[in-house]
Image 1 (cartoon, rainbow, N blue to C red):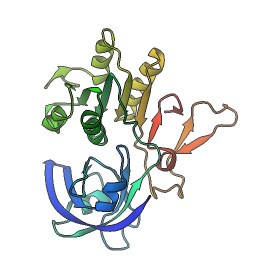
Image 2: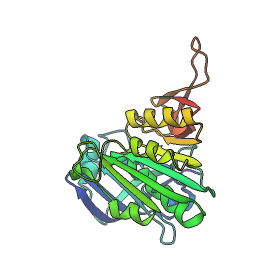
Image 3: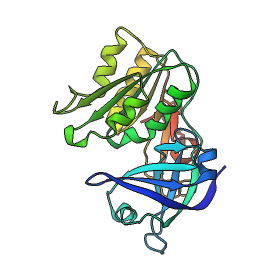
Length: 264
């Protein structure tokens, strides 16, 4: 159920130099949202920029009807969004997406993300920890110590937390996928959930498929409309013939997919 509403900005936090967390009041959106959903935001009440910005849901405070999202300033749209003030209202549409993360009882799950791809995984880890019997191991990968974000928050929603940095300046030196592979030598998870940069997702997908571990990946394609009209977020299906490729659109069929179903 998609809801179009004006959501009041309750709190703004600057997490890093170019990283912001917004808390907004959006009771109906929160009520209908699941881990993996996203929202489309009109960054400013004017014609330019015309297109909304798709942003993943970071946290759902269901008791108080508060939705939190985190975004990185990358261009004009997100720069304008970062200038918004507490008390103003954001024009949003959500929750959007059809494919969401599977929340049910597992024995062990691995939740792996990289950089800003960590943010959609927080609500997933939280709900797995609070509402299922699953043991949750979170793997967070960053380029360096300065970019490590939300360590305490993820620690609170996981049974185990592993942090890696590419340059070894914090946590374990190397990539998060390498630590997941090492751990799988002694304890194979029942399910892997992943979101992050494309090279990481490809590595996770290849590993999960090789070891036949069920895996869900959240894709962060560029989206203009968020409802399947512009057709700009196409992803090739894994089982379509090479001479007649078939595509799904991330905003409608995803953004969460079974790792065996898409070619990334």
